[in-house]
Image (cartoon, rainbow, N blue to C red; front, top):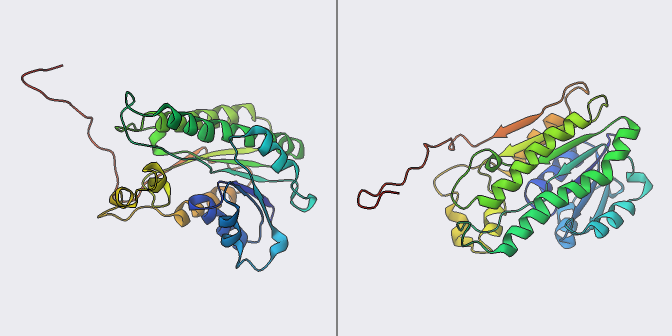
Length: 256
């Protein structure tokens, strides 16, 4: 039997795809998310229930997360891989119009939730001399775009935290990887547009985006490399996406 992997935000998207990929590979999987029924539905067809543990918690809440992880049964103790997947974007408005509540939700989830889970599980990895932190970042942490203000900033945090974490862990066997997907068709755009399926679907019109399974395959690859190999970061885009020219505003009558 393989080791034990804990995946946050496991009710959909990249998290759900990682759960499927690692379960098929023989891992014990611990899934944590707010939507309990979605996780139950995801694992309903998984035959070996002894390798699955599901716990409901909002990782923005430190005490709730601490309790959820503290209640993990002994059979799933010794988590070897943490996939910090839980995250979201809200809105595409300019900074001077965006709702502060949306900013707070992104910061609490994408930054604080990731920190809480890492801090709770990392000491055990260091003590056991075995572990891997896989953070799901975004190309938005490198490349700005209109409306990406706080979302991009949270993913830039994930990038730099991953790098600093790696330096803190120098001298231990614990690995750290930051995976930065580009356009991927999950619930991401539906959440960003607050349930507006028409707007969400337009995001992927006329192109073939990445899928959850694509990112799960990358996570699986980084985790299964020889123990002395650390993949610092992976930036992945669909072939139909690339970098664009720098934006320029032109107004001949009223240049600014």
